[in-house]
Image 1 (tube, rainbow, N blue to C red):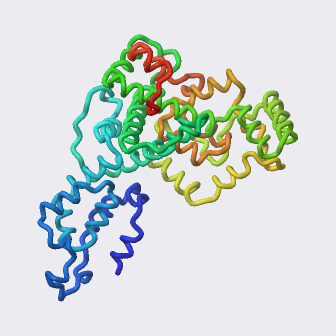
Image 2 (cartoon, rainbow, N blue to C red; image 1 turned 90 degrees about the vertical axis):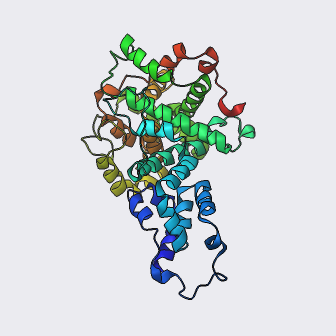
Image 3 (cartoon, rainbow, N blue to C red; image 1 turned 135 degrees about the vertical axis):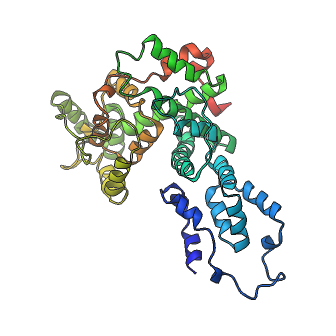
Length: 396
């Protein structure tokens, strides 16, 4: 049957799409899907349970797809789901993407409201679509966390518990809110250390406990590792990767390429594959989503670029993929940490070449360059030394 085929094809990608409202409203079953001669003795066990118990089952489900799948099993379960739709979906969203208070604080932020003031937002299907999209990014960071946190100590690497994943998601939402509120074109380099700017940033951080600030600092360390290892690798990192693939001869050719690009830098202009007018100030807009979906998500451009990144051929130049050595690379990473976690995750997955990243950054405007992140500097006077110096995070 058609509704059974829809159930088989139901996946997390449906939850992330803009058709989430349509998916939820289509959970009512057609009359032809039930057997006319069904009797109480042939009904499934769930159909005999009291409504209160079925409601509790709905409220205990861990994910949004599981709620929608259960609602499609029979007319009675579909009717019970429809009667308490928002409460059921809110509980499932809390279990899958929570904590929702931090997430809704991020989603409802705008320039007209101070970021440190709590906002009560009624739950709705429109808000749920945004929760699913942003929560999916936070889930990616929670999955990536063990690999980057224990990169140099793989013997200690382990999966995070559900509570630890929730803490990672909360830290991602809080860092995201901080970035969205204070890393904008309205705070250029000349004003970022002004007393009123520092006070505004400190007011937001004062909302969180010492343990929550420690989680934020710990997760920012993982974000930094992704930036300096995947998005903007240093010349030394590029040389090591080429040496592992092609030996010492390949490494020597890459060092020659570093010298060429140092003396003859690439001309300024839009990055490969990106529109010249940039993408605006913030990470996600309809225009950008349309461009990304049409050009990258449905083409092999990213796979080809990633495969050719470190190839020693006439079409590839690994020497041009490095972002400098030591001091220069440090300031590049500091600049890139002004991007929010969603932007950094997108660049990691869909911009493997330096020209692509440069095009993305150039579209943000001149304010972005030579204007490092402010989270670490703001955290010093608002947290204890143990938070700022060597946070252990989830190792304890």
